[in-house]
Length: 416
Image (tube, rainbow, N blue to C red; front, side, top):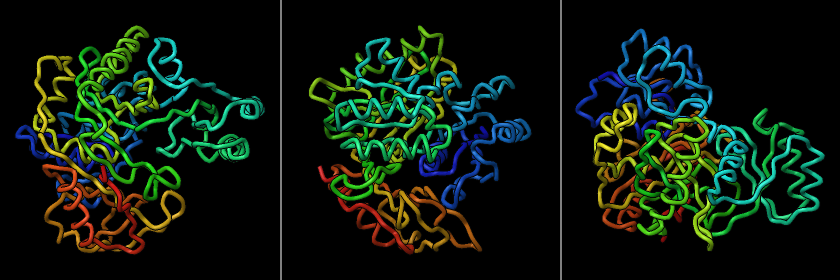
């Protein structure tokens, strides 16, 4: 098979790496890819959001299967466009991808079908939102309705902070049109968990659970990021809890979408808060998460191509999916200043010395034969062990070998 993977981050590197292990795959292309992906696939200079060019490339190169990594092309409707041409593509269609593309759509769906989540209000007018914030309880969570690269969520402790965030989203438009509608919801308390599941629109099969570390600094302090590390399985997530999540959240949401006339095929990613009242939905994503994919896929024993084909053909119930009985730990190395302003273009050294872990490239590029930084989150280093401690020790040992100017990573990932 010839496979095209769309995207150029750590998640896509993890997908490419797993696909490269399949005996069914002869050739992998990645658009646009990055310096690390280039070792496993032919990188194609097409942006992940350029649906027309991607479709053209797929037709011209007789691609057998396309796997979509990031959310943007899914929300734009790339699956619908490819399927019109009879092309095989993995991911939800545009109407289903709204589960990530619009937080308002998701909140309405959850409330309509009594799926556990926090109370919320949505506002399109600045003054209405401001009035509500003056009169409401605090702390609250404020979210941009649309896609904001994982940075559109703010926890605010009081009205002054809330007004500042509202100004950023609705007046300064820091997220563009994604902040035209602002969601204000109650703050949920507990441990966070990420649960990925494969679904063909009927059957839904959970993957190994994961835990993401969102804050930039140790002890979960500082602003939110796209993720500074992750571990799998989630130590706070047992079989009893999984059954509850399946029965009260994952199965009901697929059924709810069906009732709305939407068939969801692909990866469904539930961001949950494990509250005293039970698990509640924080958000859904319409694709593999990042950096959770970098700990989940290394533990997958079943051929990923077999799973993808079963989903496309709506035969997911016919396949048995197996996982390694191990622990995986991933630590993200970021550019100094991330998630705010940061510089790029610094040479990365020591990559060839890493032996006890796998280095997924998140924001890298090739420049004059050298690998350089090209993003806020630069590398995601993952190790597997029989315990979190074993995997953690390996990761931090290998991270010492890597260096670039301003390199920063959290030192407390996987202390459980």
